Length: 187
Image (cartoon, rainbow, N blue to C red; front, side):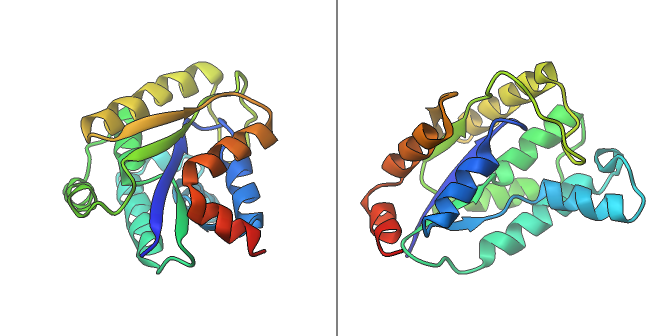
């Protein structure tokens, strides 16, 4: 059974670059869902997905489908988790769907993920994209919602500081343990 790690942080923290580097080195990665839900909505002509009542539920449903995919190898890194989706709901002022709360409880009870969550700290600036439309101040506020949500469920945040990319990736590789090193060496 694969060891599964959550990699998270506020929008614009640099998670995607770290994940792409890990993936290129042979680590199994599960994509985050919010960006894809937003992109699909934008394709449908909905410019501000986060205003839709079903936005949080759609993200959680996609996350659950992606997390259900069998892991490839001994280590898997998940880009955000259901706890992040709860933090997003709270940040936006949306009620958390009952299914989300139940799914988080099941996730915690089964020990699906390592208790150490890799928390990527903000870089000190934000590069906005079609899906990411947030200021640095808003991202810092959202970061606090993430921290509080993970603390509430008993996870330990291991902070990945604002360092050059290769140093961040090296730190994450070290935290993933020897199984990750073996997967990376086999490529």
